[in-house]
Length: 167
Image (cartoon, rainbow, N blue to C red; front, side, top):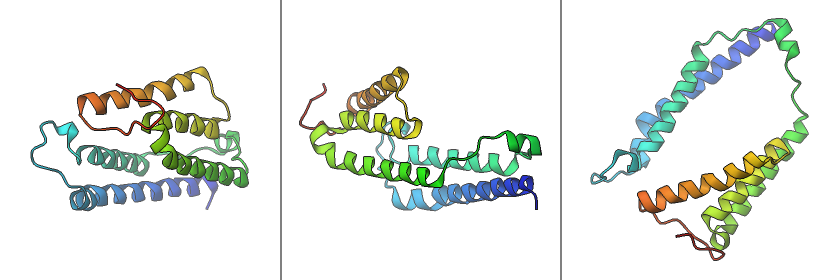
């Protein structure tokens, strides 16, 4: 078996796995474990809406991986960047896990919005090793926009924390 065939088969296996997970989520897990009241006025506010969207996207990714023809020539495979050291990958994974645990611990004090901003910046740094101005702007605007939607449109209480209270 060549490298090309091995990569092709691994994408097929990953596509099959994604498809099975999507079917499990759509037909069993979400109806079984996500309770949805019948008096929800808007579909997008239903507790089952977004999990079903995510399950559908997982299914689409699985179908894409199953049916694409992604065989590459030997020249294309050799021109790809070499993967980084496995130890570096595990260190980054550990740092991300520590950042998420610290986020969960600090939500009471910092609040969900400020904590999300800080976590977003830390995760960007872990992944890219740099923080540019566009990442900084996204890390600030995205949590504030989500807070605005959930607090003012969906009327969902968001934990504010002790540092600052948002309107």
